[in-house]
Image (tube, rainbow, N blue to C red; front, side, top):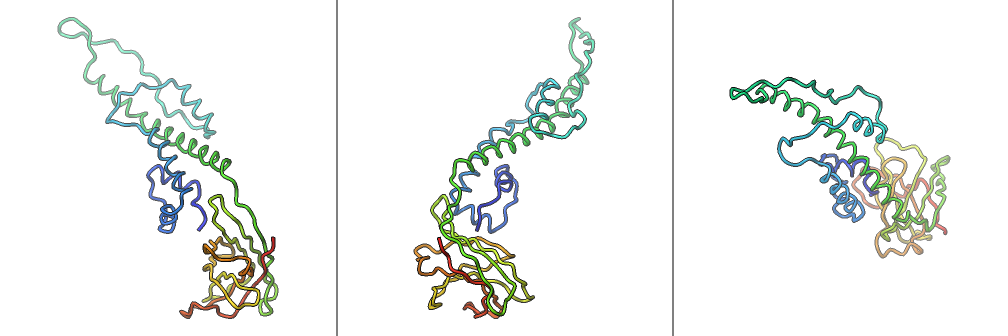
Length: 255
């Protein structure tokens, strides 16, 4: 299975339930994705406010304008209220001046009124930093290395079909076969990807192809030099795991 996309990892780090069952299984086994989530979680944790009802001081409106500019946000009306007009203090019974209870409640409501805006800005900043972390990681990690490739030619019953396959090694040292195919898919059938010996004396299933392209792990220890032929077959929902004998496209890997 390919790595989880950057947006899903960032939302998962923010506590959003966005991962599907297959992605959660991949995250448990993939060191790269798990490390990315850990880094993004540290960013998100550092950006979240802690404590109940903190006493916040409204920032200068220029701060919110600068946040808009940095994040490239569209122009929207200011969400921060204008600074309250100064009010004359009410004289206390002892002659000293003291704020009235309504004044204190109004100030507290004012702080709470713009708190969601700061939380939204904080979340946007976390996503921005997350994107930077992911981009930096992508630059630091070497890309997949292409080892061999193959043009997949149609078999006689599938004239007009085509495909290609690429053997790659990942940054972690895994071997993967990336395939694509252009062929009609009749209803009630599915496609399966295989590695065969040139004389078709042995074959290994890599898995079911969903759609017209996919990425498959090569079993550890399998000699790809011996199983060098990539085959995509049309299979029927008959419960038989063996090759149907109906190959759509086929080709030999070559460096």
